[in-house]
Image (tube, rainbow, N blue to C red; front, side, top):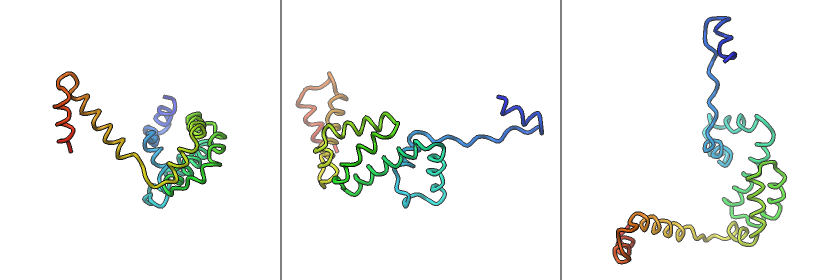
Length: 151
């Protein structure tokens, strides 16, 4: 309140508005996006976001390296990544790194191999949503017709 009222007392004009802080989704998008895909006016935003303190910069580097492994299918690079991630002070990143170590072979295969079960998972999710939509109102046969007729 003082910061806002002091300029009014001095020159009669309100204090300039503070820049809006990015949402979590915007910050995540800035950190994980390729710098080559950013528009020229957006290139400054990640630097401003990460320039506030060193810890987000370390986390961003860790997240970017994992995103690069995913994008370029470099599962072999995963061996050194968990140690780097666990060195950060961010608990979610450390937890993710510990989880990746628990099922290391599966995570490495997921990052290295070209095929995915994403399509099957999407279909399962769609079927569950259709089932929930008709919960208690239809038997197996109407649900079967609905699943087969759905786009």
